[in-house]
Image (cartoon, rainbow, N blue to C red; front, side):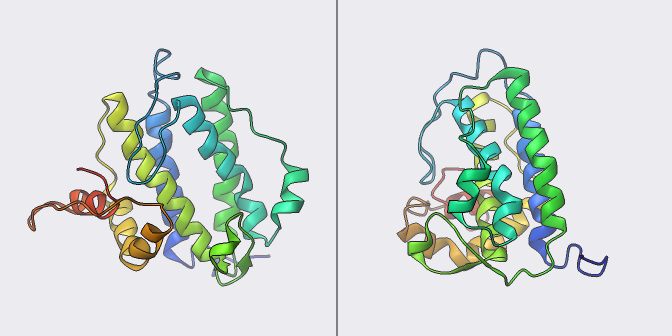
Length: 206
């Protein structure tokens, strides 16, 4: 059992909730006419239909507790059937909130961030629970911006999410770029704001 002393013992445990909340805000503003819109490739992320994007993030969060507990992909496949990629509207929003609430609780209960985890891309090396959280936070965070921009919404990310992602990216950006996660870094003015510099580092045009 995780005591109060270990709750939010690493920044990623708080940042996960911040990233999910930011993405929830955008998902909640998807109009009925937007669910079948095609996104454009951005920063290394592929172009997909909006409802497929939401389904992908919901599917990711449904696995969070299992992965953090050290569960294997093989075991998880039997536990979690294929997530429906055709959900849209209130059904998709409700499904996202349901799996995300559970994931957030599982993240806060993490008591050993150095625990090895089993990922589908284990061929890239060994990863810890903290590494995994950084990957999920990055995924949610950058696609919050991508979706908001596509839908014409305010694409300003929360300042604490920008700060946290900047710390993560400073350590992993170049390695992940070699894996195809990010495109080439974009040049921005030295006096650009923190979000613009972060987006440029991820291969996005601010």
